[in-house]
Image 1: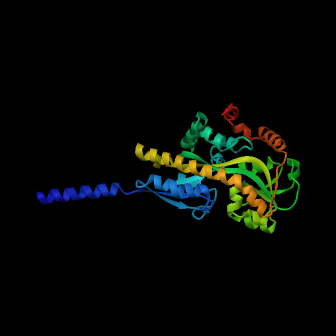
Image 2 (image 1 turned 60 degrees about the vertical axis):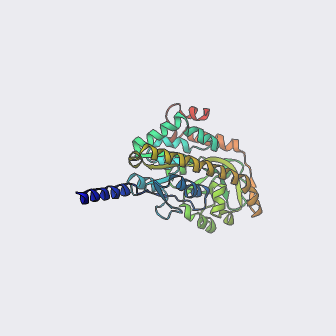
Image 3 (image 1 turned 30 degrees about the vertical axis):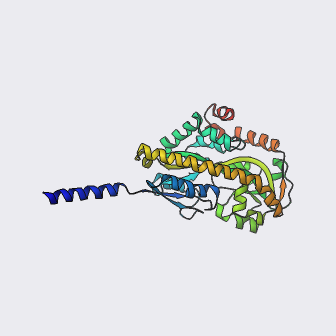
Length: 321
């Protein structure tokens, strides 16, 4: 009898230990490990969710090719990813409005969108139609043009015929054409070589990305169009999220908020300092007629098939935030 009690107790302890094993969260991103958003996840998010979870991050496209991460999360081949709205728009076209040039004004506007009922609607669409749960947006920086050569760029007409690298996907390619350029899809990891060899004439990225990827080594000028606020949405497989306890769910949410509060501020700080850095590297910095770019881009979007997928009244609701 006593032996049976000890055996039962031992089994109970073993079961409890097994149930206490941390849940491993594999994460993939195409950016480098030293980018602020990557550091925020590794140094802050991972620490905040321990010991219930372990965070296993893969950066630089080492686990999944850029653009394939969402499907991997949907199939449970990957637990988490951080993807831009353009990738969501491939499956839920309504997300396309978030990719429009000059719509999201800055990091604070991005935050307000996702803390509002507008953000709740996007989160619901992602959950219901994609099977992913959005935790939080992460600011990447405001995108500008980084070009080879000495071409003077003041208006969209000055970009005619310019081969501008844009990420793959219809939304990204349209963004490039909405600036007046000839968009060309090139994988992020291949942009440096494409610039170096002249396969492309320029690329668009936030200033921090230009520094991290050293694009300034193979370009000559930065044109401050400020045409798009770059951001991603941290997501997790919805079925996995729903299997967690409310305490675990809140832990993930709080950790994401804390991590990106730091990285958003870090990107903003870097942006305020990087123009001086690039000038020191011999890069010419030029501010074009931004109003001309905005007007041209707005007309392109409003007269395109993209705007037909925008829910009625949503543009005005976002602009009002």
